[in-house]
Amino acid sequence: MTDVLLIAPVLLPMLTAPVVVLIGNARIGWILSCLAAFGSAACAWLLLDAVAVEPVHYHFGNWPPPFGIEYVLDALNTPLLLLSSMAAGLALMTATPTSTEENFANRRPVFYALFLLCLAGLNGILSTGDVFNVFVFLEISSLTTYGLVAAGPRAGSALAAFQYLVLGTLGGSFVLLGIGLWFQATGSLNMADTRELLTQTPYAAVGLAGTLMLMLGFSLKAASFPLHQWLPSVYAAAPWPVTAFLAACATKVAIYAMARLALEVGGLGIQGRAVLGFVALTGVLWGAAAACFQRDIRRMLAWSSVSQLAYIVFAFSLGTAAGVAAAMVQFFAHAAIKGGIFLTLGPVRSFDDIAGLRDRDFLRTALLTLLTLGLLGVPLTAGFAAKWSLLSAALDSGHYIALGFLVLGSLIAVVYCLRLMEPVWLRSAPEKAHIPPLRGVFLVPSIVAVIAMFAVGTSPWAAKWGYLAAATLGYTQ
Amino acid sequence: MVLLSQIFFTLVGLLLVTGLYLVIAQDNLVKKLLGLSVFQTAIFVFYLAQGKLFPGAVPILGGEVVNYSHPLPHVLILTAIVVGIATLAVGLSLVVRVQEELGSSEEDEARHRERNP
Image 1 (cartoon, rainbow over the protein chains, first blue to last red):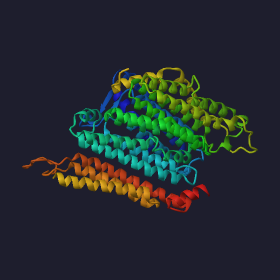
Image 2: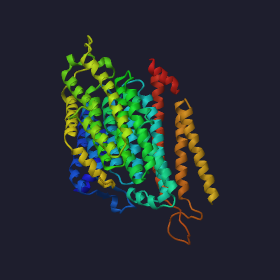
Image 3: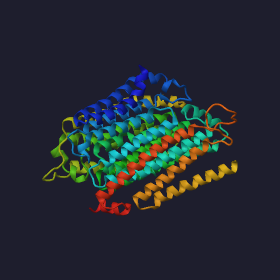
Image 4: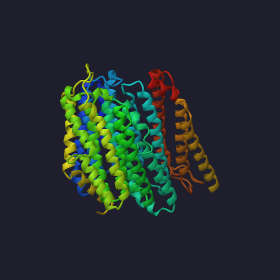
């Protein structure tokens, strides 16, 4: 039974995708794809108890590793599987068969199929214990994302998708090169095996070169500062369910891959971690500052994501159990908050669209305000829990300068959060509003995001999984 | 043989930077894709070179063979080539859409028209 659950988060969306295209009915396709995404989430949820004890392995074709391909689910990737599948399901819910947001509205089953394949790719990156499999799944998720971004309603969406394609393929190629260098140094593709062999190999320099190439490739994919250039235009151009999904998990899966491969398997040394941490801290400030000057609401939120993702990279760069726990809390916090904000905003693109929102659409105003408070880091919300655990992790490691950067980053965040709230509460509504109110099925994901935000903020659930993950990675408390 | 592999990997490096240069320096979207293909091909060659041994026979059992070449890099790169073709196809179709929507396949011009419709 566990075997089926283990491969289901990858297989379920992957096998549902062609079915959706073959049936060809938009409504049935929509329901099927939502079910597939939530089904994957349910499988990940059912596995949680098992992986809390020890990692669970699945050997394809019963070939033992390191010769065969294996999937390994442990305390680090199983909660993230749950996160990515849930986010995909909720985002898909808002991509209703009747919405006119996408460019190829007449070929909607293809849109759902691409979405599912993207989820399958991300879940594959999370599940696999084979280095080359990571590359294959990375390309599956990237290729489908290019298509999803190009489905955006703007004239420039194809251009944004193209720019993403160029940078994303460069990133993927660097990953491929890094895997090749590792293979040269070790002769193995299995993660656990590679990790062992990299410490013993006489070609340590080749291994290090591979680690750095992987670092570079995943930084590009994760839009981690200073390789974030593609992110704002992609978030602005994509249809909003896609933007919400990308914001909630696509970049985070790349950060996970970076942490797992470069930091754990590659064993990046203390100097490498220091450089990574310092660059991430710069990114925290740079992203937050740039967000304050954007005229497009989605670009502003995208720059805020650059800053928030840098928090996760910094947490991993600490290399302590508390750091991994902080990263895990921030994974969930940012996914719930930023994904939730994009889903609540829906088709909103400019600040004028939300002017005087409190008079027109109180539900949306309330949800948006709660989520913005979370982004700000108000106590009881997940944003506060994430920042608190990160600050204490930095203090434990004696990074007092980092503390200044993180606090300053949070202070700058106040500016862009206020920019989001000011038109909602203080401006008067225009004569004619062209954004439909948030009703029915569109409400559900936003409410779930708000509940998730408070749940992560008030319970130690995410931090608990963070510490379990740190234990599987071999960090002591 | 060391000299041969050094020459080989130098060539791979040259191809890599050529591709990267084309991607960064070219303004035309199709030329960017060509640069991307050169970049990817350099990595394919890098993989393929790893598997070859001198002397090294095809990895089929039998005969009086001293050494077998490693088949795994070839298999891996077969996958990567397929991915590369798919990427190129998606990229070219996006160029077609950029040309249709913005009337240009030069990056600067297309971006200018996107901002000032």
